[in-house]
Each structure stands twice: as structure tokens, then as C-alpha cells.
Amino acid sequence: MFVPAGLHQPRAERRQLDQIARAGADLFEIGLGHHDAGLDGPVIQAAYRRALRRGNVLARALSAVEHAAGLRPTVVMTYWAPLHQHGPEHLARLFADAGAIGAMVVDLPDSQAERWQAAAADAHLHTPRLVPRHIAEPDLATVAAGASGWLYAPASTAPTGYRGPLDVPALCDFTTRLRAASPLPVVSGVGISTPALAARVAPLVDAVVIGTPIVRTLMSAPEQAAATTAAFAQAVHAHITTETRA
Image 1 (cartoon, rainbow, N blue to C red):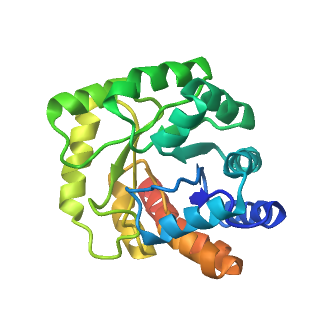
Image 2 (cartoon, rainbow, N blue to C red):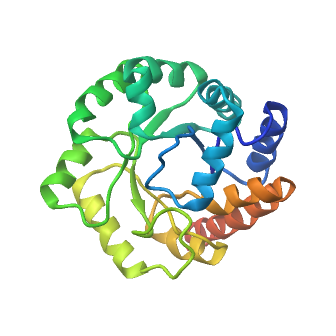
């Protein structure tokens, strides 16, 4: 589950992470707030703005990572700008010291990829990569070679928070391309707006990440976050159970 850090006071945030873990989340993606989250839709952008208004966004994110990592494997989701501001090497070490197993830079510039991969490797962090749907084959080979942990295949080409239909056959074709390019697991998110869609995507990938539905709940009715998590987790786990029985 994707949770942007700093939406609520630390004690409330820790309680929410506990509840989301108990409700069925197998992994946490903790979002580091950024003022120009151009790949995200309005819900996550609003969440980041709220977190930024609270101040101390990096310290709050590290605190959230530390707590989440005590519950489930945890990665950091970030844009390149904070890494550029603080230094990739410095932030990689901070993320690792907080307990993160990896960090995904959603807009990693090609010119900075080698530096980031080296910094993450020195800190023993995985570097999962978000792969655009229409990436050319030479670029896919380059991205796959520099990734570790997993490849992230957006279920939709729209920004996060998209609530329309998904082109599941196109996603299936894309995951096939990714598996041909790399032995890494394939993870999907973006546009998986309902448990029913999660159930359709789950057979195509190794893991499903739910973002905006959880963030929307945390923004407006945080007491319902566990129920929202449980609905999505049950949809995904039902696929796993069915596959195991088969």
C-alpha cells in the first residue's frame, strides 16, 4: 500500500500504518512529499501539499519509514528533486538506516541513473524502476539493466488517481515485454481504483500496489483506511488462493 508520509501527526500516522498492515498490506510504499509531483493526480498532489505544510517533510518521512519497516517490507517513493536537493548518497543512507529495502525515483533522469544506482547499491537499497508503457526496446533494456528489486508497470498511462476502465490486454502485453527484458518481478499500480480491478490485474503481475484509494481515505476518513485496505487485499489474495489451489 502507498502511504504519503506526514499527512497526520506521528502518533496517528503510526496507528494508521499498524491498522493498514493488520488489514492485509504486504508491503508499504512511503511517499516523500514533493511540491511538483507531476506524475501524480490531484489526490496525491493534495496529500503532498498537506504534508509539506506541516513542515519537516524529510524527518517525518524517515519516521514513517522506520515504523512501517517494523511492520512490513518498505520502500520509499520519491521524485528526483529531493534527492538532488539533499544528495543521492546522503538520502540513500538515510532511507536505508530507517529500514527501507529500496527506493523508487519515479522521474529518475537518464543522466543521473548511474549515480543513483551507485548510491543505492552502497546503501544496500534496491532500485525498482517505473517503466512507461510505450518505452522503446533499447531504453527498456537500459532501464531493466539498472533496476533491482522489481519493475513497476503502471496499469494505466494516466496520472495516479485515474478512475476509468483499464486496458487489461495492453497491460498483459506490457508485462510480457517486461518479463522478456528482465527476470525481476513485475509490480503494477496506477489506476487500480477498485477491488474488482485489483482482482483483474493481480493474475498478470507479482504484486499490486494501491495508492489513491488509500490516500483518499486517509485524507477524508482515516478511520476507514483499514476497511479500504482489507477490500483490496482480499481481492488480490483471492487470486493467490485460487492459483495455489489450481
